[in-house]
Image 1 (cartoon, rainbow, N blue to C red):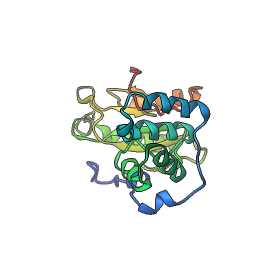
Image 2 (cartoon, rainbow, N blue to C red; image 1 turned 90 degrees about the horizontal axis):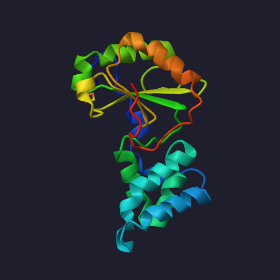
Image 3 (cartoon, rainbow, N blue to C red; image 1 turned 180 degrees about the vertical axis):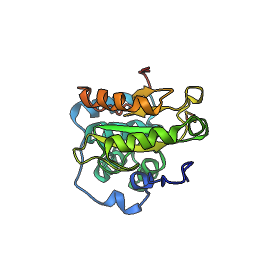
Image 4 (cartoon, helix red, strand yellow; image 1 turned 120 degrees about the vertical axis):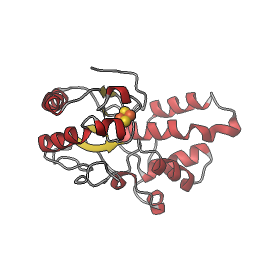
Length: 202
Ligand code: FES
């Protein structure tokens, strides 16, 4: 559902759960650096509990490719002694994993109650107009993907926008959107899919 009657909730395009997803696509192998990173993460778990590292492993796949591929899920399943379907279950449950290519900047606007009451719909509409794409779409240049998100945990600073799971914008007004997009367009920053909100930006 959407709090905005005119904005269909199209996130399912990115998070849809289709069992066949893990059977498709080319093979995937971690770069030596990412494999070493995962091996280091695995030292934090007892050998019979290494499946608990599945989220970290999927983040590494997304960091390497830009989204979670079927080959990446199969590769993770092999390393963690899981069935590919189990990895797919995780990847399709958590909304921070993308199952198809996204833009360099994934702009996610919180649409839950506090943000909705503080005008998130207007922010999303203005973003949509500025970027020339609807919610759930990526622009032709592959620079921006626009998504709606559920509560980002900063309700007292609504409306909130998160970019690439890393950049954080609070108390956003429609009139701020132009500068935000221009700043991102000019940014040399690489896509960040760390999943950790370590950077807080005004
Ligand atoms: S409702 Fe938007 S951050 Fe909680």
